[in-house]
Image (cartoon, rainbow, N blue to C red; front, side, top):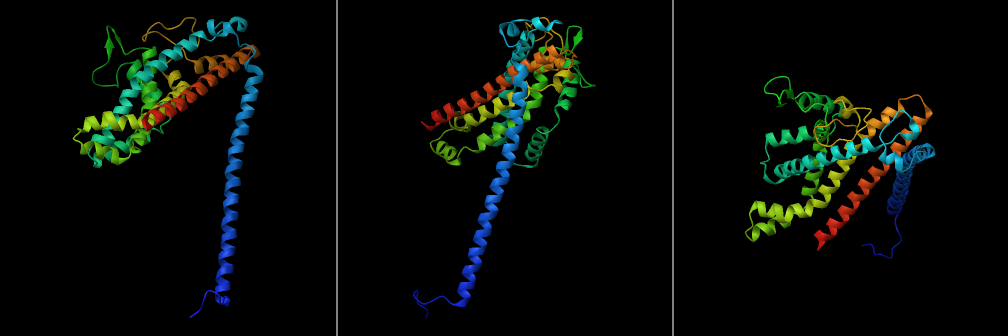
Length: 317
């Protein structure tokens, strides 16, 4: 029998030496991986700073009250962003109203009510695949379904003598709703999955029905994640250009939409219109529009963070 005070044998010294060597190699690999990740992050941050600096140099030349109150013009010194801002507000308002109940309802059904079988697995797979479909495909679908009011066969959506909603606010909003619905559904499902099963079991244990459990316990607990995913999905939709171009949003609008059936333009479309002109002054106007769009996106992301924190604190109580 060997005691703890006996000197180590040659075999134990060999094992100890091998362990120390492997330990050093593991730490070295960890540091190298850390430096690689840091380098990747710094490259992205450097590109973002370079882009923001380039926009900053030209983007504040036309930043004034008139830029927000005037409509587009052929004269850059009096051109404004008002029509694009109002069109974007109209579109995003309708997108939020339509996508939230449909997306959250679909997620609740798939997670809390649907039987786990091949059909629900197929639906889940298709939703995940739709989240990666290029946005131009949704633009083609929106052109056919909402602008023209038909899918090529069967009944058509007609208002009076006109079939479809035309190139209007509602067509753009419904097209963008189709675009972000898979994202909203997937984000809502992940938030619902994160709710501990013990909360459901405790609710069922005191005699609550499934709807009472979902509405009073699961949904409030999942709401921070749902709202975060919803606002981030809206942030993607507000910057989309291809679907809006596909449904025929106007590039020059000297008015603001007054209803969902009015023609419209959006901020990305107006920026594209200005940047496509040869005069340098319009390029500076486009840079100012990009600044406004970036501020809008950052504001929406900040709101998502605040809502998540606020609802998380409410749920903790």
